[in-house]
Image (cartoon, rainbow, N blue to C red; front, side, top):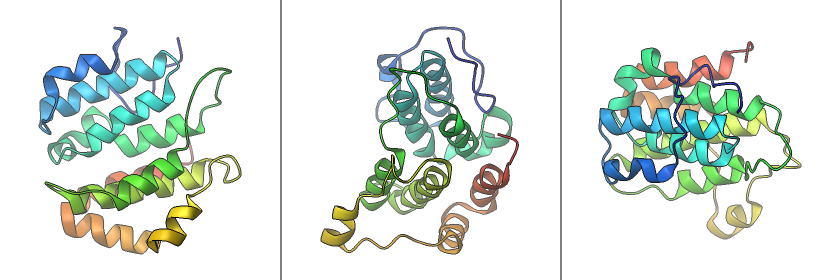
Amino acid sequence: MRVPCPHLPLEERRLNATWMAPHRGRRDAAMCLAAKHCAQSLWQQGKPAQAILQLNRVLASRECWDQAAGEGNPYRALRWMLLQPRREGEFLGNPVRHFQHLATRMTGPDGELRSWRAWACFWISLSALDAGEHPVDEVQVRREGVVFPTLGEVEAGLVAMGGEIEWDSFLSAWEDADD
């Protein structure tokens, strides 16, 4: 078992994505907390890519930000996970590409806010990972004319759509040199 992520609630059970089935289609505080516990469990089991997918669920919930400071900041959790050395056999995938695709495909309720959150995660991933091993999707950039927003644009989007807590949560991860 891996050391627990300090930015998520502690979890001793061995959970997996099926444990989240009762929360399917929901974006409430209960789903958010359950996803944080599931992310922690998956991280500790050596499944970083699956843990990050659970953080996606956290980022889909507007209600999570009321509890971001006390119950775990998903931006800080993401950054912390990305900066940890990978063990042989652990699958991380390409979070840079993942968040690029997520940001450009958000629709539905709070789609614009969730897109800005994905762009924030894109920037965290881009800054934390080796670009040679985790490149952006240049094919999508060419085909779809994707233009990456600046950090200033991400700030404006997060603040406009979700308030200062959105930006403060991102900024605490971006500026935290202790992780």
